Length: 600
Image (cartoon, one colour):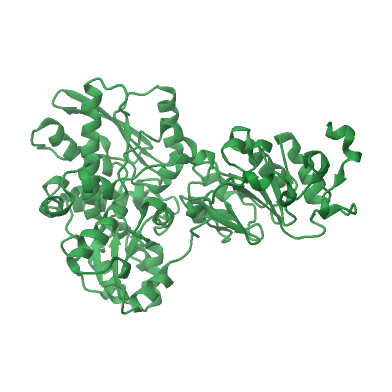
């Protein structure tokens, strides 16, 4: 049946049996959701182009305050894709093409009229079916419930699989484009002085947009974990007599926290930070730098393993290997380079590694049931909030790290509790998981992960003692830095990248087969974690970043132990509990896998 020719002979479905148009337009409803199926079949049929077109057309019509575009999981009727569903009237359009989007917006969204030519025709009932619940074959095609619980998004009492991303509140957005100019993944679209929109397939949850917005218009990520302040959760947990609350603090936090109390950038406030957390009510305070030492043990072993296979002629080993401790970077390559997801290290981030060790090794030694132990991370990074909710970091029903607060949120809490930060005495991290090497300390700056891992890779690969442990070649703040390291005759080619814009340049070369690096470090934020979106904002002042970086290197210089594998506490942890790096319990507890999020 040709639908255009025989349209008049086809009856309306039961919901419209009297010919009454039941579509909701802007005249009838203030808010409409456009749900674009992005399951595998619809994705292959071009749903991303449809999503992009909806975002642009809605922006052109200045409808951002009235219409949301949501990328969902499979609706279950793959043969009719790409599928678009309009809520709240639940009208479902099939075989939608990008060129149909203008008609859907003008006819349905603006005027509230059904677009017959895109409705499903049920030939059993010989009817146009605008509401999918009436489709005779639809129940047979329903997919299983989505297993990725962190993507469940609820609209009007119905749950859909959605992509994690930030959202812009159109009622608050002034269209200044500050977020758009600073988005490293080009996820934000919109005309000047008009509400902007975020493409969920490009958003990495890095949080850079939130630091640039002066109007509080940006929130998210949608679908699971809101970019919310977990300070209230922390206060509830420290007040619960049945809970043991452990805080771990990232390397970069201690070099920026003082700025919130009018101290110069780069002031090292480690001891006061620990004391402040104890005054808040935290029971134990450990150092994420120690988690960085664990990461080096695993990542160095992984690098050496791949290098030896590569040198032996293994055609299947993935070289270069990239770092994996930055969650925004992980999001970026899962979203945009899923075909290259076997190249990154499988190591969890230092915070997640330490969380896993705390909830197993340490909890067992202390006799604390896992369900009674709360691990909160204090991070320079907004994206760490998302990382805590990833399914692979949840074990025995509880996350390895329960939630994360930022440097700024910790400062606000200290102010809120009227703690006089300047007058606090210095205290030390709790032992034994608070005794890191200098290698763990330098994780907080761009080039730090590379330098830390080189200190261990050199000795593991060559079997010789590394005398000069400072690798000036990888230090600095340039966006892309290259170096060649002599490993006893083998020339190891490394690359250090900071910002996702520069990461895109490198990944495009990797995809095209135009590079010969062996190891690549990537950090999403300018300067690395010291320039993170959860830190006191530096307002683009590079001298602030430089001061924080100098503080990191000065602490490393002052350490007696500057190689992760020389740390006796690390050695004991592996001897008593983890076994060998990259094997057995260490692999099961400290490594992860990545998703192809381009097809969600």
